[in-house]
Length: 575
Image (cartoon, rainbow, N blue to C red; front, side, top):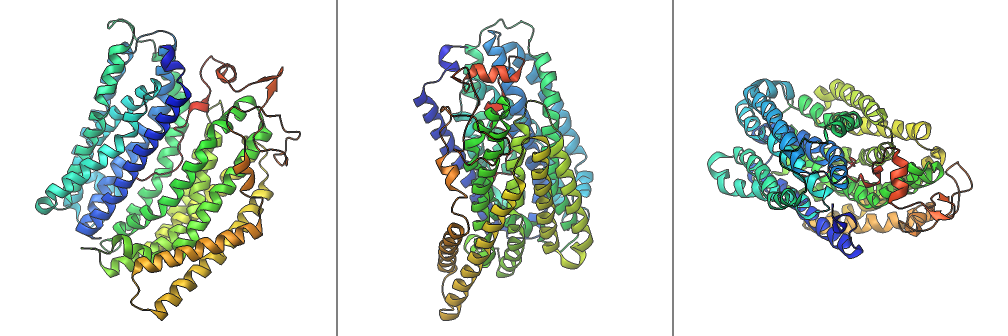
């Protein structure tokens, strides 16, 4: 690998981060626009339920083949090949055709067994025929997502971040274009056709850069691939992440399985509410992601006190964001849903159902965020760990039990409550596991921090609800957008005041934490409760151990440590 690709100038890193952020934000925005368009054109009905059952396939395949497992497996393999002067072409020539062949067999099996897949995912679904057709179309994504993920991992290993960041932008452009062109002729099936076509665009947008990487790679075309052993080793490490990802996604399986037996449109109401509730969770996790390299470095250095401080501070910031968002969504859910979705085929009855679900879903936001934040601390360790997957399995069992017991009597609200309860249970167990298996996390202090923020959120929610109610009583014809803004401002103002009064020290240490790569001293205690500056890493012989040598040493095998693993699953971003 050239010196340029090994050591990018600071300006290049900054530009790459800006470009990637803009492209990812654009793709996420188009994903949300896609949902708004579908609500406007198709509303919430049996046909949208049928599409969402088929949508389960790309929803499950995406984190496995693009975001998590593929990236964490292939990026280190390709990086080591390039660092050792070995060619990339032999690995691509061997691994990619085999992967495509295997994934094609899976896609073909899904297409052939589509009726059985629909029965397994959503027994009793009102519109089985459209669901089967949509499953056969979306099954293509098993292959195209795999190829796109392989390309993304290879490009990231070459420090080319723009094309991988653009894949969901291209994906949603394809979906929106096909819905616009075909919805009048084939209805909801146009969305499934768009998913298939959009997945090909994910490959196309990366293809030129990927071919340039192959053209510039050293090595002979006929050389034997040298990455097979690394791949096998990587699979042993990636298995816990795969199981964790699938287990977390299984919450959606449970909802759709139980929701299929409810009234037509129930799955759609759950989906629309969930997409709105995801926004603050994703934003909070994106913000605390900037501290992940520090956490990974402290973990590699064995500085458990620093790991514990980092977890507590990040959790305080994330909790403040999601609990404020929870207060807003509970207070203003009907107005929010009306502004976003009540157009075209989406009726006022749909708004009422979706808003009620959103209010319950919002109660699980803290659990969703905490699980994502705690998982990164587990996966930052050098050794593979199964604890996050095991904890999520317990939460999933609780979700299934609660949903199964009360869905018949309470409908979609029971499913939303089951989701919130199961993920909150998993979050509490995950935090307890951190103390036993990762670092001496101060659980009592964390509980006190979250309790103070929760009380502030409760007060803010009451203030927002009062503001919206007074506005509605004084001016009944006030537009929903105005009510949303007024309620949001009331929630934000009251939460800010109450949060400061309850604990002005909660967020300040996170803001004041030193930049990555600075010189810090090790904390004096191993309790995680030191009141000194937040970010302190181990110094040896007067040298700041933050460079590549320290990370290589930490791995113990000459491999880069997981400080580079920013692809650790952090939640369910909008797609």
